[in-house]
Length: 216
Ligand SMILES: Cc1cc2nc3c(=O)[nH]c(=O)nc-3n(C[C@H](O)[C@H](O)[C@H](O)COP(=O)(O)O)c2cc1C
Image 1: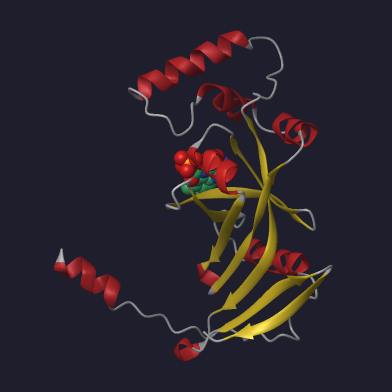
Image 2 (image 1 turned 90 degrees about the vertical axis):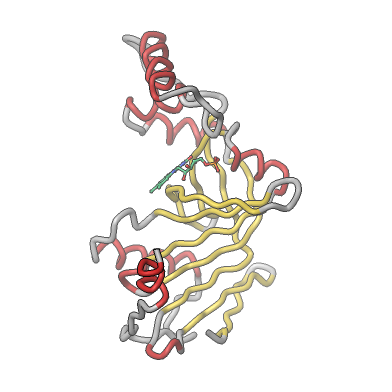
């Protein structure tokens, strides 16, 4: 046990990557995110669109989990999930979220904070219809975040849904769809030597984004 913690405590990676200055980043944080996402994909990072989304419940207790961003645009950052899940209940009650993309092999992190809204039904329908059939069935079958008896319980729920939709298209469950985070703040973090990292923050000011450098 003690040995395991020594390994965690003493691990140090020197970040020798090129720096990031206010003048280097795009005027638009969305364009800057796409630049870094493309570089993460080119570097063959696993799931470069994965982000950790943090929410708070009605008592202010935080919770976080990884989801996949399916759109990053001037509209916001969209991900898909079950509307009865713990995260959706938390988003319904607080209407705010924060998200983090961690591209560790590139010594990069992107953070956002913003309000959230559900995307429209036609938008959720369009994405749902593009998913593989197995994922569509899974969306119906899984009572996400609820306690279930066993793996067998889940598998028999899947069998029921498969029977229900046999020979026809799987429609979107009304309890499944997209949430959009509308950032009011973005931060791009680039690791640098001796922990003197670069942090460029964008803050929303009316229709424009104002950029600052933050101390590491
Ligand atoms: C790489 C990865 C991608 C994931 N993508 C999603 C996703 O897009 N949507 C989703 O609902 N859950 C996704 N999950 C599962 C969530 O992390 C989480 O277990 C689930 O959504 C239940 O969270 P909740 O109980 O806080 O609502 C993903 C997990 C991992 C590790």
